[in-house]
Picture 1: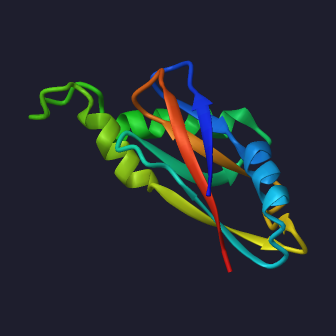
Picture 2: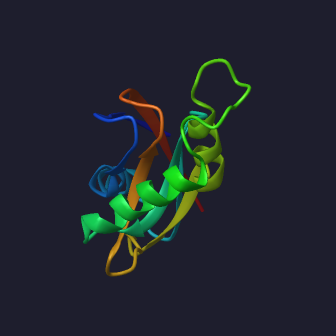
Length: 130
């Protein structure tokens, strides 16, 4: 298993980690199978979505802010309940297919670390399946 360290700059940010995951895949010498891309944090997640137009990530952040506002009278004392909710919605992991030793992503797809409680340095764990 490879552990990537990803620094985030903002409280909420979608960080494209596709190239880092691609480097891991190349080093694993996995011909066919999948990679599990996992985030071991409760206020961040992993998503696969469009990576070409940055407006998509901005739209996702705005939608999530409406869905789980930062100050909505939550009971959790740390003041980051919205971050936990957004991470649950996003999910903590994604399987990414590998074929002929390469990530099998769609034309516009990218892999994102979804930060909801930054800035922080996060870990993303990548391991081969298959």
